[in-house]
Image (cartoon, rainbow, N blue to C red; front, side, top):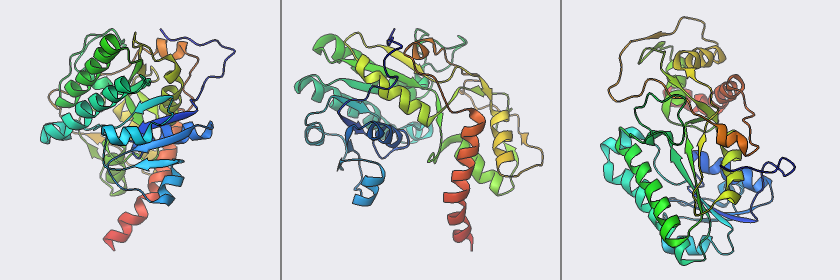
Length: 324
């Protein structure tokens, strides 16, 4: 278990870091969190990026074209750590385009680990997913809970973890794994909050499921803080931690709270259908994460209110313009 002296700063940033997927939802928050602590950050991603966007993300350098030995070599000069945030986070994509998901979640991880092996064994922080647990009745979910993924996405994330363990065991690459649960926050353009915000602002008040399904929600700022501070604990023993809050929250509560943020007062309903393969309940054991000195700071109510404000400010105007 990773522990930190309580007299130390909670977030000890590296001097130089590489963030793969730095333009993504979680990657950009990690990048900005690092930069606020004085870290020099280089990012790697698929697309080109303007200088203006690079400065917004607090990136010193940006390398497009995806993850490869050459992009890693260019970005990693003098780096203390690689935060491997790149990858697909979509179960539907993994079902519709399995090779895309495999390349983004497995091949890219192999590239990062092998680069580290050949270039001084740079520590790697690997962002995994609660999706590796799949269907389980072991609540709260501990890092020792058996892996039972129920989607290609979950299987590919588990394969990524296997690669991490392989490179740590056989090639002495120091690593740490963070299994993220339901990460949300400003800028999230997929999954429940994104879809529900569109529906609520169209006046659609019926949702899929029973509403009693539960998830463990963590604000992206809290997730970024946890991930950043874990880099110094990377080792060949590969510590594994759950990135969550340890609070089980019903989907009904999430949508009702979001509706109130948008001024929706009419009752919310659910169709009662259950999607085969979807786990009903998810809540994490976060004992190891809390033992590092980290603690979540953003309450669910505040985080949802921030998300609604972001959606109203940045998304609704464009939707209204498109409809006019």
